[in-house]
Image (cartoon, rainbow, N blue to C red):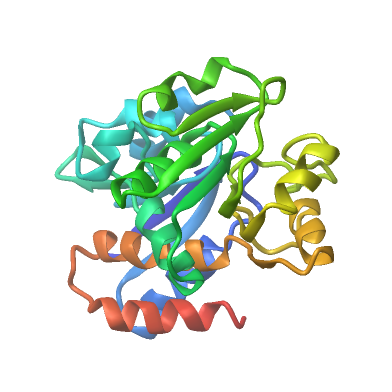
Length: 264
């Protein structure tokens, strides 16, 4: 019987995940299919998952924290951050994982040694990335529009800022984890602030992929080496697929066919 997998998100029509995972399933003759689910209400995630008889799923913005709450059990890094992006149906139980953070570490390897990072945004992706960077003894500051979402970071981050009290430093890397620029021409912070930040960093990354966001355009104009979220997407996708197939497929082969899907 064919297994069914999906990605939950809002919006979700832009997601490359079906292309990536179906490329692996087809390339390696694994009996499975992967689709998209546009989910407006995160509290309905669990019942939707089981109603669709899914074997597993990925979760994108804005439902990663809701996915954590929906699980019967959370394993590994996801337990530490309270953020889940990969769900597995294990004998009728919903098991949650987070592959975002390791996917991101994979993506920034080519930047070399990174010591000081500014993370813009304070949602699920920001939590996962900041916590993972800190695990590697990297100094992380977090900048968010409002103070309410910064509570999580206060005990772990080097500095926490809102737009009102931001103090500039020199950074090796600045990462946008907000959805600014996904469907609009917004920047993740006021233009003058972004200008100053970009003038004080070596590298830039955006969790958004598939289009040059206004944030990356500005980095490009300043000739800063940047990455969109494609490598992070590939990294987390490979690790998620390995969980989907319960390690029945080799990681190297999963990566090969998933990488091929980026040329489609």
